[in-house]
Image 1: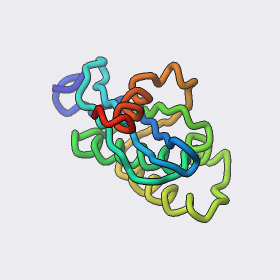
Image 2: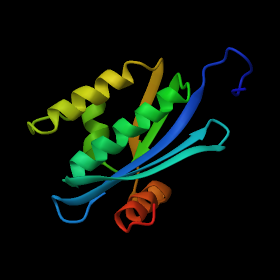
Image 3: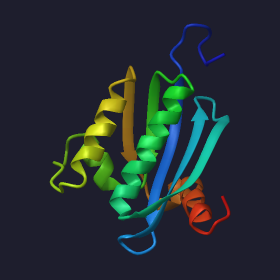
Image 4: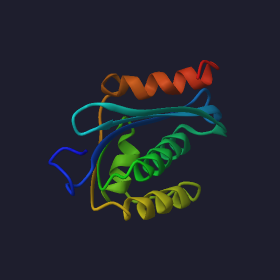
Length: 142
């Protein structure tokens, strides 16, 4: 049951992070999904091959959106440590890099499947669990 009783929107909080060792270099993503009450629903730690940091950030977001949809979310609070991704999706920054445009378009399309969503960037320390999953994947511990 979701907070608010039957029929209430399912609100999830997803922390996402992507990183590359080298830029580009071996890259990975980390996703932490909690319900509105803070109960952990899922964690994802995956390598994604060679990518830049920004591509890894978008790939983490896309994986988080995919998992949130599968978990039945209708409302999302997205937390990441990439100011670029947050500001692009909030339409503060334009997407200029050609390699980023398809990722931005995929993320925008996926966000359209939710009733409500917000995204904000926080300092890396405030996104430590997702960051730890990225490093675990890169270190072969995931």
